[in-house]
Image 1 (tube, rainbow, N blue to C red):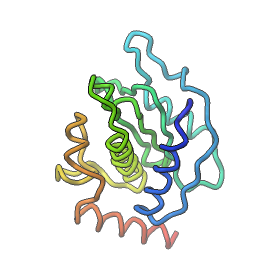
Image 2 (image 1 turned 30 degrees about the horizontal axis):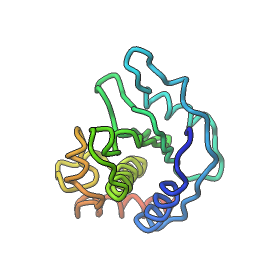
Image 3 (image 1 turned 60 degrees about the horizontal axis):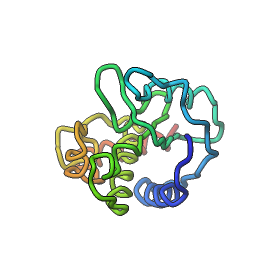
Length: 174
């Protein structure tokens, strides 16, 4: 949604194909989510973005992950790195707080790409029915800070991996 650099889209596509063992398609660019903007917070409500994505009724897709370059929030939190609707199988991640520059630090393209994968895997994990994990090394651990994101990495813990395999087996039978 809005303009996202093609390099980050292609990198994310390649990584998600490897990690989930599925074909990933880069969809069309959607308009900036001005409908979700909160003028006092100067942020975008992630749930409204998820509803809009779902309402587009994009046929032929098992799951949808939107990448946005705006700062996201939900009413219960001052910000979120992303969000997902488990039942509708739509998710969104924000690139804004994944950049070092957001924290007044020097640009680090490799770290930015890695953080993008971490959050993409996390939100897509929710669309498979995974919940937040207590293991702070698991990608499904809830990130309250960018430090949490950096610490946990992009891999599922063995417990979440088993749950994911069961979920995929169930999906194959449906």
